[in-house]
Image 1: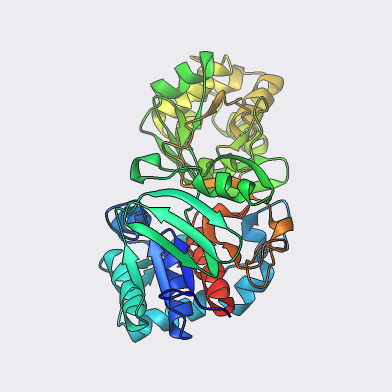
Image 2: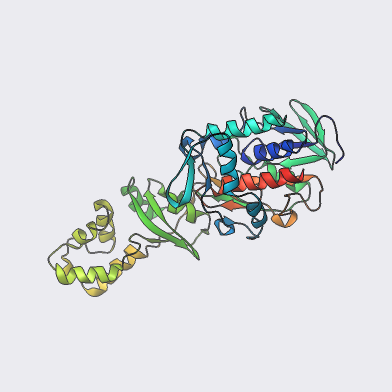
Length: 395
């Protein structure tokens, strides 16, 4: 490649994808500069997973990702997967543990991941400049980046600035604007892995139940997740809701099974025969938290009624409510609390093998900036590692 002293490649964004890309490229002898407007690298890594960083998942497949092109992630994930990242951590002696659904976390601190990536960058001589504001990007290879720390030129430019989720740590739509200026398409962005808000009677009900968490199965169209649901004063949250929020479409209901794995209708009829004098609320309270049971029985119009005096039709209605409750969200909580940005730079314009723009040689887009969003559970970090690695191999 043509070299423009002192850098061969400039990476905008010192997050998970950017640092991985820089370390890999520098390990191949490339002279790399990383720029970030934050005052420290890896801020999203540091706050993730309650400070323990859910850095990947035991099982990662293309089916764990949302994209207009569901096959786009395949090449990168095959070339650099969870086992490769675990091998890197092992070299640094970073201990980790597995939680439910194959989620892998650091035993001690997310800071260990950042220190590891910085050490890898340091070994390759990567220069990292933080608190660096970019005023303009121009050129077409070489690229010229004017910043608060001076103007830099390089034959390759990597956009690793992430999406718009969590603006409190500096997230912006910069990557999308820059990609558009270079003629790349951008799929409409929206908040993903985010709590859902409600209005009217649904919100009144949820507010009364705030603080209750229950295992549920939530679905929307073909997407289905079994995990915890949390009632809040604003609506619904918890892992199951965050997962389904990435699939939900405004104006339509989500479907919630409060008693997954149970034939609720058959169970209620069995209880009616065995314990006809028991209150309906008592029977449901044996399956759900008391406040939730009371609210659902009241919603079904069976409060204060012995189950033996309830018609089979009424019990069938209660069963439908418990196993197929269909509240309609009014919206999500938006980027403020979202864990990922859906949409982003259209993969149709990017190579799946290198992350390089097909129409702009030397321009790369990686990580959350791309139209790739993973499930909750370490999948988004794995995409950062994988996309950063393949780009670093190409620089």
